[in-house]
Image (tube, rainbow, N blue to C red; front, side):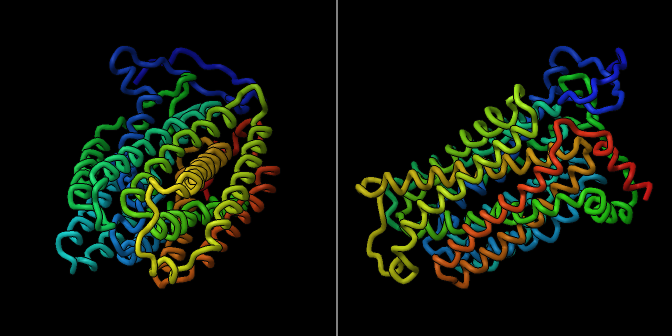
Length: 473
């Protein structure tokens, strides 16, 4: 542990301060200083997710999990998000007991199994049940991984750096999907079957296994010192009973978070229409891979733009930045969906089934369709970045952030499970599209009063003492 140099009274009202005293610690030097630096740790975290959910996203972005038929992937997606929705509500308590590093490691295991199930299905067409079962196991693991990820990503930076840290993580994480999609495009450039080959799945499987090995190499969060010299505070290890009760305490002590619930539900809901009902429906396999590449590449720019250029623009008050972010996300919601409707109104499941050939990237109509998919990627990145930033602006306490992230991932997955089931049934494309648009619009509208009443220019002491309150109850 580093030596304590001094204590100082933080200035009341400044963005990086509350109204209480904090100990300032000396940062370690040399290689140890690099390894324990918050920037290095959030970069490592990004690469863990680069390898695991990044490959999951690359496969999903192709549409149908790279299969000719989207049925297996749609049902696996339903299983994934149904179990994710249930276990994510409790993954915050698991994270507080096991610690973020071990929780992250356990979470990575499901991604390798999921990719392996698609490889098995490609080799043995009767492996459909294995794909769905692997999807269910992935839901449990994903709840653990994303809770640990959100907990660390929001706890390591100072208040003024939260948008930047979110942007750094999101850029690295989405680079995984970009590279995965590029690999799929190259391997399937001459593929005429409209489904990816075994080599694509094998490559993705190897990358996810690298992510599994990387997770345990991350530093213990309690050894991390922020760039301002303050130390990341881990929650105490209470009983399981008390930790389950903390879910109730979080809502009781901070009920305004309920207004973010529609935004939580929408945050993975739009993937179904984008990936299966647009990309997989209209394009051939190599073009689906190319679309996935530009989609995830756009996410890098979207997250960095909103996180660094808007939400962390320190010359403006935090409340001002919160409203600016809201305006940008709201405009994107309506622009993307109005544009998408101009295409969706012209095709149905019946007309797609009757297609003898699907759109290729060499077709004259392709560029406009590709730009829509790029803007879908931008919207996704801005949406996720903004939600994480709002949660980070509500508290700096690791335990409270873990519970908030659990709510976020639970509701996110509940919405996704419902819409993936609708796609598997299958519901008409237009029904899924309209429900997506309405839910996104509701998300930004309900969030507005929460932003107005709850987001302040600095985090109060009360928001730092959630853990003590929960265990004193």
